[in-house]
Image (cartoon, one colour):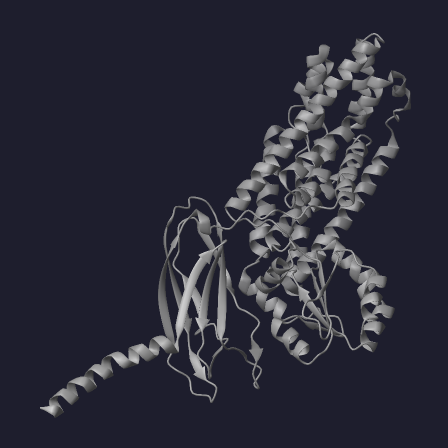
Length: 559
């Protein structure tokens, strides 16, 4: 009888005791807050977790209206074999964004892990399913975008205004400007009040046109963000599209082809019409008539505009419009100023061609950015495509002229489009596999610098060595300026070497989730970010976006 009860008690212990100890041995908890899923692993004492994404991960079932990023792993520690491992409480993070159509509900998370004893033996891999309620309170808070410094904002706005003024002396704008100005003065019979009113109406027409253009870009940008376009210089497709726009408009400035804006006859009739309504319509159609010359500027501005908030986009386009209307504003205030408007002549063609070379320089800058995004092999395909594109533009410019029949014009136009589009399909391949294979064979690190990784940083910090980190990108003009004038100069590199500074380069030319997390950690919307870790100090020294040699020397003096 006693034996029977002993067997029953033993069986009960066999069933329940392992569960009790298992619950104490490992615990996986999860929560969702502020646009993040956080899964915390409580690793028992004497155990560790190795960074192996096949066994240590967070998976989330698709949820309507949410888009999830890659899992973010903490720094961890390097073991004797150079593997990253974690002990104690360890939290993995997976961020998400709202893409539209979100409704509260339940989200399912799968947390994988495989704990190993410090002696070497590992437990079987496990996966825990966790269901969490999610509502609006867990969504990412709207992060205030860092305010652009006033001097930089003023610089952008000034450049927009000057760009608008430059448009007035372009070959397709200046003749229109001269004719309309003379017409305005004659129609007003030298009455200063009427001249002023006509000039302001003309100005309002131009500003209205640029407001419409700005609104289109703002709508495209807003729509693009909601569907995850991610228009930025980290995208090879976007850089290539911008390169095509700049290159094509450069060819137009060399008269390989001429952009013929529609509505020429309507614009002419509107320009000759009297009254304030006629002046207002003249301003609208002046922008249309100026398309062959405004397009290169607006094409370049488009790439910049997609990276700006809506108010900045509106301000930039308004100031371009004010610059274009500026001569008429001056004439409205001081009618005699019409005498100083330069006369059309051969100098305009020379000026136009100089602007063409400036656009080619911009195209070269974009080609250089593509080199670091897709690698040297794929860049050769880009150059071949630009040759095909130039041939297509030549066909359009040579055989779609007004002196040819409508049929020939249509044939030349369709043929040019087929060559341009078909050439792109045949030569360009920006698939991730191609890009990765091309980039893996190339290294762009400057001698003395190492590729940034949290593990390498941790290794140097544990060894008590000073570390300088440069988070930058090849398309970042501020980064290249700082490198040319400060970081890569002989005296600074010598100073780094003498002080034994470990130099780490975080390249954000292509989107890098690890670097993105570090930028967020220091409240930066983008590169550049410069960080100095000094021995014995837990918190690093963060330098401003524009750096000087004195800043570097002042920090090195502390060592």
